[in-house]
Length: 394
Image 1 (cartoon, rainbow, N blue to C red):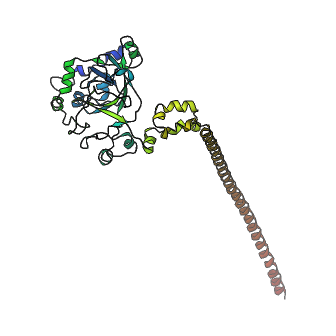
Image 2: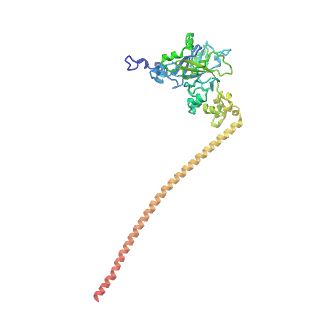
């Protein structure tokens, strides 16, 4: 704002010059930079469009997402809690199973993953954690999802990324392939981020409830990033980031049932064969690694069975025949309707012609009848005249 408080300052209205000078360069907007407690690298995570809330300063000044994240390219954490699921690649851990602290990492967006909080860990019932994807799809409330049924699934707005270790040779290749590299952070900044008070940070940015969406206060606010990662574990943790700080929680594989799978993956049946126009190889590749992890939903054994594929092919052919029959019936019905309309129009025309001919005949009959009456009157007058002459002679 200007000194008089009337118009915004020019600094807040300056456009992104790099985007103007290099219009074909990769989009640098919708990126946040945050530090994980105990981790020596600052993560730069690219969000999908219109998924990242504005920073605390722009929220206070009523700025839009377009102005904050795209034009001005603000990379500060949002004013409200955002959820980022980070999956560690095999190259991110050493022989002991601990995450590497000295190398640089590349971050890339990943598809949805079936993860949830570990057993015994629940979301804060008094917070404002968004509902899970299943409850979002079925239009359930937060009370139904988080309080009544205690769903441990990740929020529907969670962004999934994969972390890959980069050496000195392939750092540029990682940037060229669409990855956003991490930034080395001084140890003092890491220690400060780990020990920062969320209440003090909230007062600095004027946020009333900085811990909305975080876990219960009675539990440990954050897990240890240097925890040993087992081979059978999910190798994933959830980052809950806002302008007041960052908290992480290690995740487990989600226990799915049939209803959840139908909502989370709307095309699991496509992995079973050509019932939807896909061959077996393409269907299996589309299912991805979840076919091996959840064969009861993707039909991992049945997808390789020729009899199952033949049965589904027969079902698909029967469906096509049924559709052709329905289309033929619809065409026949439409043709009969058109013929009925034409017959109705022809019947109206014929009735009008018949009525016209009958009227002319009636008029002719009236004229003939009227003429006969006049003749009869004339003939009736002649005997009276003769009778009068005879009387006069007598």
